Length: 262
Image 1: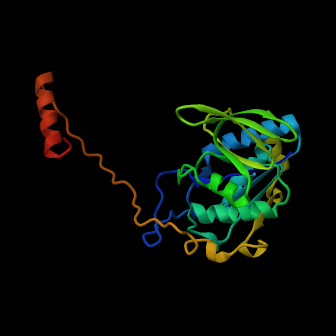
Image 2: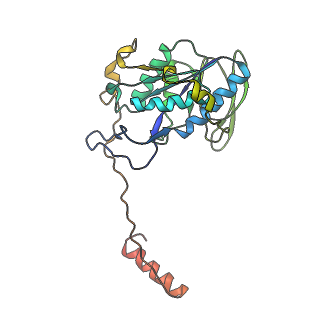
Image 3: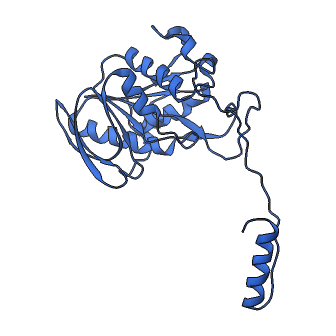
């Protein structure tokens, strides 16, 4: 069983600057962490590996600092990781991102299963996994709550479709995205941390990819672009109201009316 898990490094803080021209986050030098949803995808991959054998490889696209997140996946149990890092891919929307990542998946060779987290905490689109599957020409299932059966031919999963739960059977190769809280992710191993280093991570630039059309990458290759984005305004002003319950009710209503909130 050859499994590829797609992960992403996301900002570890809400204090992130935004490029006023491109409307994208300035990620360089920002405190970052492994996308929390990807932890559930990793755990799902490790459990399948323990049951069926095989390999788990991880894949990410981002700046050089994303190596630290890929190393975390190795410390958790992944055999190796691949980072795609090139400024020509900066500013990619979900469509361009999906195109580039699925191109790397093809170049990584044979795979049975691709696993992604349901979404990322910086974009929250939940679109990259399904779009990759469409581009790869394979079946997919999103919002997977549980993996019910795995054999040599395929996988059976249960999906959360909000109003109903759906059981779906797919033949390999296929792609799934894992729902939050689908399992309990394991912690990185201290022993693996001492034994494994950056040599477990392969870094690709655009020039290392066999067949990627650069006109479909980055800002220029993104069919959607953010028109305007801005950080929320911070306001810590407060006003203390005192009086009887009836007086407080009247004062609060007057205050909300003055601010056109009611």
